[in-house]
Length: 280
Image 1 (spheres, rainbow, N blue to C red):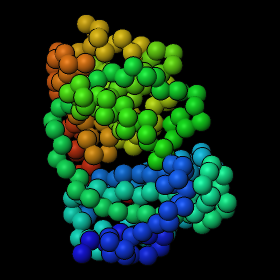
Image 2: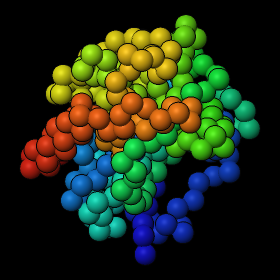
Image 3: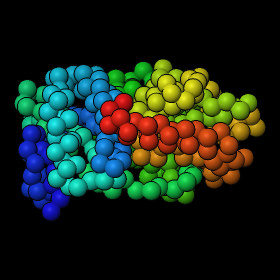
């Protein structure tokens, strides 16, 4: 039977229970990471753990025991015999009261696995009528306070889209509900700067660091401009996914030559890192 890792212990999935007073459940007080697993190796685990700690510090949670979490990931992948899958690490503020205040309880740490899924080669996106707040307290942090994303994505799905795209409060392109977005202009790929309020996605950062993608802010209207040659999404599960439709209208190129080459280069990066243990 499939297992989960709960605050230091491997338990059967059906026994993985948390308190009804857990602050993550009561208020959404927590952080998380979702990591692609290839051939039993959690890809870029070091970067994911670093971001997990950054997000935890950003919302005022105590310092995490990252080595214990790392051991939990390894133990769980082995116990569940995960070859190609995804693993999610969730950390909450632990048991608390029925309100916003924390009471200093031990953190709740949950690690679980699930299918990675093949995903679609392209995505249809819908631009949200609501902005991301690039100056908000949670800007740039990967928290479990996801109701905004859930509601916006559900709205986009009623329009036939697979993902929702946000601008920010100053009208610039920002990010998706669970993705970073890239645009290709004059044959060059760009992604919004982190000052736009976008989360520093691990796949995004690897593409910037190793594949030479540039950071630049664009007005949200770039998505409707004739200057837009290609566009694509990235995440730890999607990797590089071309955008085929924006607000129901077909784009010039879905998975055009730049997107395809970036996808190939990223696949090569994954392969090289897996040979080195995937600890990038």
